Image (cartoon, rainbow, N blue to C red; front, top):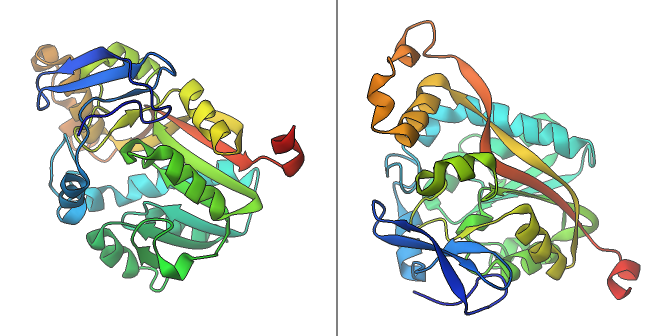
Length: 297
């Protein structure tokens, strides 16, 4: 499904990358607002099939996760890092994790003292999440779950979700509807202007086709949030925790074919479980609804 710019609707798009090794996909940039996006986007039916089953376990490197459950400890550490940053602005209150997967963030938020809940389109994800925090998860999309109608949260957390969204303006408007007046929206998403994206070129790990349909920069994200009535509080580099073998597998993909010259030291017994905090080429954006006075001015 081809269309204009996801953010501004512009029709003038220039080619940025031609990913011949990933389904012959074309990555384009809007001449008007500079948003980078997938030129031919998947249909709703194709996306539904993608997330229907196996998405979290074994789909592969280009879509979904290879073994999401095997990285529980790493996700816990990553989300603890996010929660420390959130706590600087809101140390408590209600939280909704939008795109919660297996509920790892919800579990860490509960441990940190928040009243936390999660929502996800994946039945597989919700089923797994319910095993550890029953009664705190909803299946569906934000704005379409009756149980959440009219409910507002102090924090909406959406990690690596907005790049999947084909109607980002509608998504953000729905987020605003579910935020308290002083609430905080936290988005973590690949930064197309990060140094990792720049040096990786068409091999950038975040070019996951067809699930990632948009690639934001701090500028395009700020514009999108501003249009939704949200004011950016802070934009940080996003960090993630990875075990060394997983990290090295990504590095080897990036430098192929010379990766054969690297010894497989990451599989040595005393290094196999080593966890590192590294930049993921993503950004973490914290935003709040603008006040009525600011919006009218």
